[in-house]
Length: 177
Image (cartoon, rainbow, N blue to C red; front, side, top):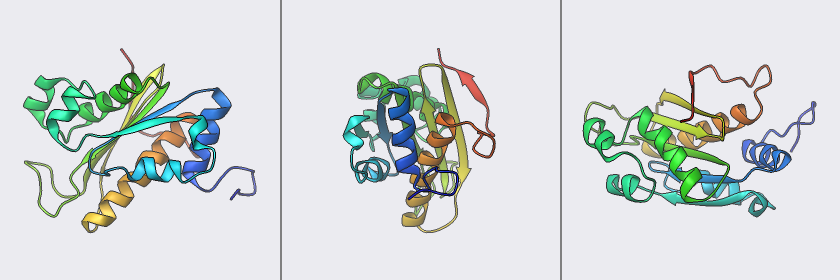
């Protein structure tokens, strides 16, 4: 579905179109969303033209072993951390041989994890030129937090790929190393 300006209202459709227009591919790394982001993307016909695949690294050790998140970072701060999200996105890019990576990590509940309350979510995007992380505190049930986290990941990805006014990212960007 498209809006008056010809842009899609469905973030998955918009993301896939923006990636295709650039000739870029996408890799997805998920923790608390457990595959929701990837599922929304593959629901769009033609997604296979840009989506390389996804990794659900629910266990902390998989974030290090599969996505190459720094083990010392995980030991020091735990898996619910903005830098972990950034490294997961970069890990998705590298592990899945994609141009862009998107990642989710957080606490869906029902219990907090360490110092992180339920609803703490970090989403990240890594492109060839930059890494962008957005940290959120989302309200609601476990299902609502997971759903909103998937929305946030697609929204961040969309705004990074199409940073026109109104879609610009308001969080800090740091140069990918």
